[in-house]
Amino acid sequence: MKILQNALLIFIFSINIFASDKLKQFKLLTFNTWLLDLPLGLGAKEIDKRIPLMTKLIIQTNADIVSLQEVWLDKHRDQLINGPRTGGYKYFYFNEKTTFPGVLGNG
Image (cartoon, rainbow, N blue to C red; front, side):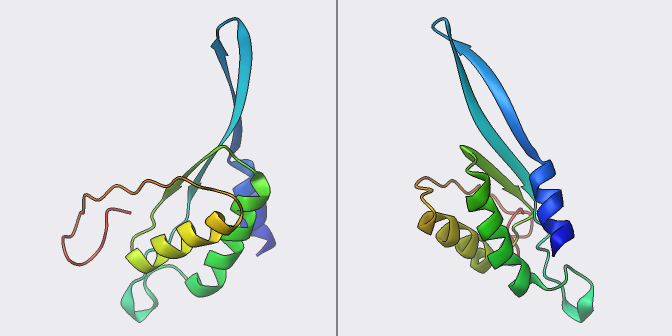
């Protein structure tokens, strides 16, 4: 799991925006979660162990904006919303369009 922690921290960006003669800075975290849950062991491994760790690391980054990719199932989306919510994150957006209607979200 140390590899996952290091990989997550690598994707933290600090972005500068000029507004009204003042420099404003915020942290943006983008993370490909690889949560594709497929039968016969063809998808991601140890999802149930990785999601709590991802949640903990997301909160630790204290990023202003977090963008997650490949969160395919509603149950995983809900876990990755509810965990950071306990860490102070208040606002969430999920793209409702689906690649495979009725089966998987768009990730």
